[in-house]
Length: 116
Image 1 (cartoon, rainbow, N blue to C red):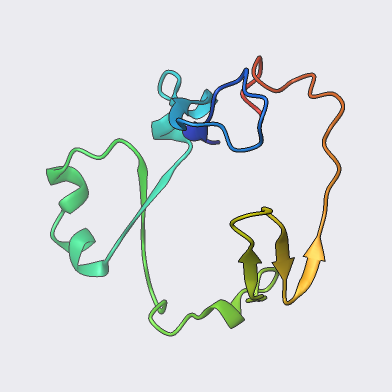
Image 2 (cartoon, rainbow, N blue to C red):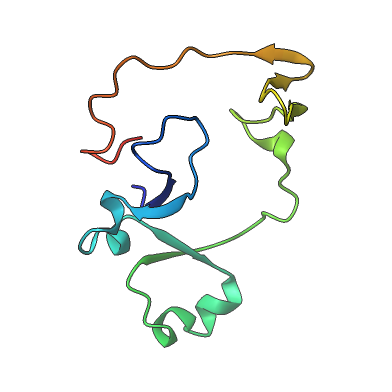
């Protein structure tokens, strides 16, 4: 559950509104932020009771065997494309190929439900 996300001016007429501020999402409401997260600690931190010393209210887990994990190890996210953006035209290219997308006609749940 997302706690906060960057959002620009909701009335902006350009795709890059300024300024962009972080705004609270559903994950920031009530005790949700404590119940929806997992704080990763080293084995030494767990053995020394760091979670209790810091009065952590979220669940904790020990991190193991992550020093050799690389981007290529990601099962569904191993690509490392070369992404370029033309500063004048805002054209985006991935591995030299231009990409495009059509603007949405309707975003019925955008601001009311903090989805986009």
